[in-house]
Length: 135
Image (tube, rainbow, N blue to C red):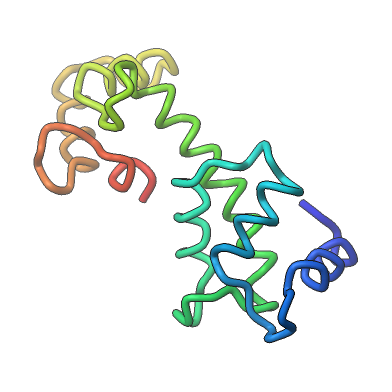
């Protein structure tokens, strides 16, 4: 996480028009140029929506630190989602879900796995999409 001084410098550099807000495009530019290891668009979108506390559609100066911390968190979730999505269809089916949980030795009983999977599967589609996995 950048220091407070680094955050101020980033803000000054990327708030091009000086309006005190960063658009999604400006935030994407920051990530691509300064934090390319976190350049995952699904993670960026989640962090952006989460950090926009006032619902303005832009990130204000007071929300900027939260955005960067959230990006780290959602990036980690996105990487876990990609690892779990064995066939790359951007959905985790029950077998992929079981493989991930048993890899981490979390659960092994099928009835418990089925119950946990159903909790995540909000739309009851039989798969977990990225939204269900990351929220």
